[in-house]
Image 1 (cartoon, one colour):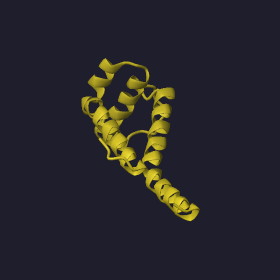
Image 2 (tube, one colour):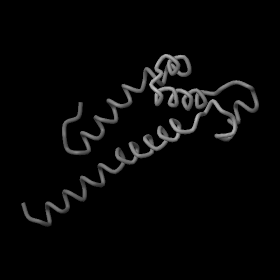
Image 3 (cartoon, one colour):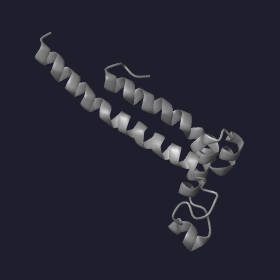
Amino acid sequence: MSHATTERTGTRRLKVLLPPLGVAAVTCSAFVVAAVVDPNEPGHYPTCPFLWVTGLYCPGCGTLRTMHALAHLDPVAALGLNPLLVVMLPILLFWWGGAGSCARGGAGP
């Protein structure tokens, strides 16, 4: 294999890996913010429009609080706040891992 072919393959592989790596970076950043800034204390996040209008928490509100609970190793509280996210999280991680594996050139899970 020539140097030019290897370089093209490397560039192509990098372009394919960027979306899964971007998703990981954005997700980790959001998780760190939710871990550091407590969504249960007022004034840290903007008011949810759905909460403002109805007085009810939306799935996004529950997801933010669930991420905070998981970051603080409280799975019972997380399950009470948003059970769908807690159940789907391992499935999403497996799916993301498969996408990354396929992008690297593997067969995936």
